[in-house]
Every structure is written in structure tokens, then in C-alpha cells.
Image 1 (spheres, rainbow, N blue to C red):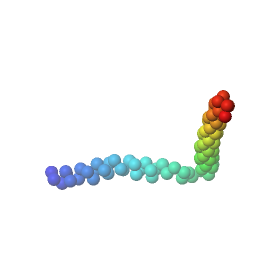
Image 2: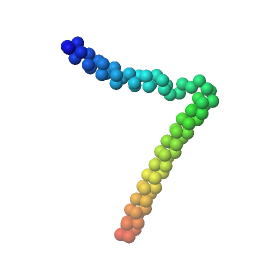
Image 3: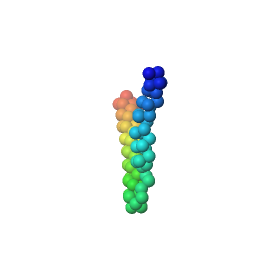
Image 4: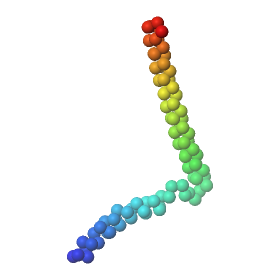
Length: 83
């Protein structure tokens, strides 16, 4: 009985880690045998990077627009006060 209790933790760890290890080894990501599939996967990865960069540029443009609106609002309020 003591042997079974001492093996519970390693057995549980083995059964939880085994699917992770096998999953990572079976689905290796970019290891394709067909060069056309590998090329298309590379194109998809490049498009994802382009999309991420475009979103960052859009976010920066929105921030610049917001800053310009705030500056315009401040200048307008100064003009009303006569400064």
C-alpha cells in the first residue's frame, strides 16, 4: 500500500505530461514535407505579421488624432479666454 501511495504523484504527473509531450512532438508546427505547404505556411505567417504591424500603425494614428483633438480643444478654450 505504501508503494502505491508513493507512486501516485509520479503516475499522475506522467499521465498529465504525456499528452503534452506527444502533442508537441506530433504537431511540430512548421515541419512540412511538401514545399508548397511550407511556402504557403510562410506566406500566412508573413500576413499575420503584416496585420499585426498594420494594427499597431492604426493604433498610433488614433493616438495622434486624439492628441491633435485635445490640442485643438485646448487652443479653442484659450482663444475664448483671450490668451
